[in-house]
Every structure is written in C-alpha cells, then in structure tokens.
Image: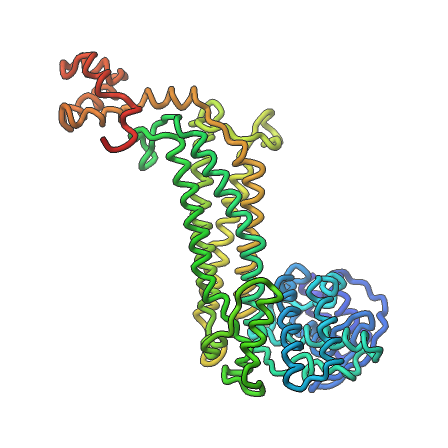
Length: 500
C-alpha cells in the first residue's frame, strides 16, 4: 500500500480530484475514490484544495502530499497535539497584553480548548505524521490552521478565509515553530511522565516492596554467576527489585528541572525576535497554571532550540528503568520456571493457556511482555540519542522523532508496569517447600564453616560431597573434619543472612 500511495501522491498531485483522494487515503487508509467536497485555501506557495469537513488548511495538505510515510499509526503523538493546544492558549492570553484583540484572543482560546480536550484530534483534524520537517514546522502550522479555522467558526466567519483570525498573525503571534515545537515536546513529556509513567512505576514498586515484607522470613539459596551461592531471604531478594524501581523514580525526578524549562519566546534562533519583553516568562507561568506543572522560561533560549539534551536525559532515565525491569522480570520468570523441571521457587498467576499443542502448559506471559517493552525502550533511547547528538548550529532538526520515541517509551513503561502489577506481581506466591528443598541441598552452605576450619578444608568437604553425591554433613564427618554436633552448630542458614 505504501508504494501505491507514494505513486498516487507523486504522479497525480496536481489534480484536485486526485489530491482529495490522497488526503482521504492518508486519513482512512483505503483506496476509496469518493469525491470529497473541497474548499480553496492558499499559502505562500499557492492555492490547494482542502477537504471541506476539516479545519486544517493548505500547509497541512501540502505536508500530507509531501510526506505519505507510514500511515495513521505514524501520526504525530496525541500528547504533542494537546501540548500545542496548551501553549497556543497561553500565548493568546498573554498576547492580549501586547495588542491582540481580546475578541480574537477569546475565540482562539476557546478553539484551543477544543484541541486540549482531544475533540479535534479525534475528528481527524491533525493528520500529519512524525516523519516531516525536523523542526516540527508542519505540525505547528497544522495547529495554527486548525485553531484559526475553529476560531473563525466560533466568530461566524468563513473557513479558510483567514478572516478575522489568521493562523500566523494571530494564533502564531510572537512565536516560531522553532520555539513552539520544543515547548510542546517538554509539556507533553512532563505531563506523560506525571500521568502515565509515575502511576505505573509507583504501583509496581509498592507491590514489590510489599512482597519483600511478605517474604521476609523465607530463607532460600542465593545464586551468583547462575550458580549456587549462600543463603538470603526471598524478602531480601525482592527488596533489591523494589529499590531498583525507587531509584528509577528518583532518576526521572532528577531530570525534571531541565525538562521544566520552556523554549517559548526564543522564536527562530533564540534571540526572541518579534516578541516583547516579558512574553516568554508570562507564557511559561500561564502554561504552569494550565498544567499544574512548575514550568519556567528557559534561561538560555539558544540552548533550548539548538539541542535537546533534556530530552536525551529523560530518555536515559527511561532506558535505565527498562534495564531495571529487564533484570527484575527475568529473575522472576527464572525463579518461576517449571513447574516440575525448573527452579519453581515462585508461583505466578496462571492467566491464559500457554501452548496450542502442549495441553495444560502455562507461560510467564506478563514477564515476556514487559521484557519486550524493555527492549523496545532501549531501542527508542538509541534513536533519541542519535537525534540529540545531531543538533546543528542554532536548531536541532530531529525533534518529532525524539519526542515520539520518548513518549512511546513512557507509554509502554507506564502501561506495562500497570499490567504486570495487576496480572502478575500482586499474585506472586512463594513455593516454600521447593525453596527449602533446594536450599538444604546446596553445597555452598559450607561457606559458614570458613571461620571455624578454614577455606581449604571447607572446599575439600564441598568438592568431595559433590563428587560422591553426599551431603555436606555426612561428608564432613566421614573426612574426620567435624563432628555432627559441630556441623549442626555452625551450619545454620538462619545465621547466614547478615554480618555477625
């Protein structure tokens, strides 16, 4: 389909009828040739047909024509559009102080509310894909056109007339794509961290902490290098998992001060050309009021436009969380391996049949889903890192890709933690009989003898027991190194859980 769509858009782009078909293909992803009622709209490069049931204008249509990449699943992320609505509303309110007619500003702000609510997104007025100009200019103009036309509707004007509300002169007043899009990036990511990621991380961390307390008295064998080691409690093992997520939450929080700096007010290259003194600070304050997040005007707008180190930093924190989750979940599924031929120290909830050929098989599917998410987040971070490292001179032009990857990582991690918590973590049980059996068979309990008989004699007991298939106690007595009473006194797993 992608090849056919490319041919349609490149060969037939000058025909208004075929252009309307391309627009419909991008929105509906089918080959319907039903005619669409169109209106004429003009941008600086000429006149184009625009679907009459859409609020976007000529520049949006031109982007649809030029970037038929990926289809609906590659659309600009919803949180970015919401963030655009927030910053445009804030700018309109502040611009009243700098000469914007209040009647127009009120209509613009009302239109912005329709963007912020998601209504206009759901109705298909934001069809552009991530893969466009690296500054996000087309999406900024898509937003400007939609808000302007919606404001025109509110004021009783004619769609596409740019009268009485102009997308550039009024909606984009004192702004540039170069500062609005990075502002939207920071707003969108900050809101998603708060609303999507943190609830998932916190609830899973709390469950693992609760399991740590629940399992605190269950003594088991530890493993290092995937080999038998000395004892610890299952609670101690789970305490590491809970702490990993606590640190992950803290890592995200440490990124927030830089994330809360907004580029708005820098305009084209960071100088603030065509703005007024105080505009940037007042907009940041208004955005903070609208979102409940303590945004501030970036102290250096040149940095805010030319690079996105704050976005890479957030992505790095997400990458570390993915690393933590991969470790935690792999441990859990290995400890639950079995039920007869694995470790089987943990019992996981049985959520669905695991095989189409093996009757009765149940798999650790929640673990598998979360590890796949972790792998995807690691890949997203690589792309974000490449994008962040390629800011040239006064503008980074990997913005849409970077924010899309960070938002996807947030969404996957937040949703994945919620699902894993609900469908696996809360139902994890300890298989105490198996845990006790394995622990008592471990040769590494011999480590408790080191202070009493020395490393070499203890190693002799362990190696002989392993070679002959005997127990540590029987072997120690057979070798004449210990008495039964000495062994029972010194080899006690419950005394091996911490310093003396």
